[in-house]
Length: 422
Picture 1 (cartoon, rainbow, N blue to C red):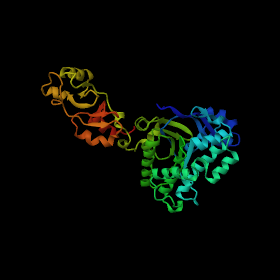
Picture 2: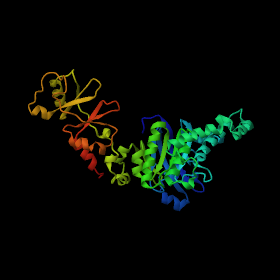
Picture 3: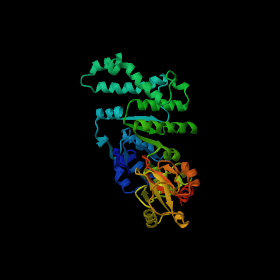
Picture 4: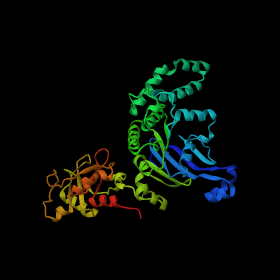
């Protein structure tokens, strides 16, 4: 599912709500329908046999409509909800086997949660709200310190532990600035817009240095423009901090925009999981197809995902005869010429050979080569469309080091933009 090291593993999780979930578990595993089970037993299926691997340092989006089970699922990760069956692993440790003290430690130090309705303390300022998470965390550390006890708690009350309030204040201030709220430190939540309140909630979660952020519909209550700003900010922060983020949303555009991987739920069941391009270009069933049919693929699909392999020769080492032989063998209409670092400097096309151009001898420079336009493989198709329209040869697709990884002809770009799921 992911090439990252697994941070969170969800293994065959079932959640049944009702008077005696264990008594109907086998029936649910046998395929009993949601409505059937409710009418005959009074039990409701919340989650049915969901398994996911969430990679360390990724934004993993769980999406679905109301009643899909997405919020129920995320609350299993920190055991706010106990599963009827299955396992939840964090760093390989089964969360369900943790005792009360170890579970509190997990919630205080490894995980933070950001809610849709902000959950701010109305009587505290922006800075004090951000500090509150740090104080709870630090009190937990002192309580867990064998040498702490009453002395540690007294030190905390006097502001002496870990640099006291000044140290906590400095750390909180850094997070306030990271989310762009400098100058609003002394404002109260009622004095802030919805977007600003959500930034405070995000800053509070980030301030604890938790390895995992659980974000449940965190931006759903915001206006569209503010929501886009928050999405941008989250991705910028993620580039700096590289946390593991589990993000719940009902908005496919949001999921496609921020997610490294997306899991789509319906009625508590997993319908598809994969990177955004896969969800968009290869929906697993009719339900997912209906979800994605009206999405603007040009804003989501990356150039690298549609690039084709093209032959290449090295400048100064290959001759035109070598290049033409590669061209013929590949059944492509273009061969790229690259420098010693793999960076394209030009191209030779089948049209050049047919037009009778002098294509003999060594390829010593780019004088007889067709010019090549380049694009980073991480760019989305919409961004490269102008290049494709003015380039006479396939646009060369580069990796992060500027080396050639493939090419994208104009027809491929246009096809990807207009493609619709059948």
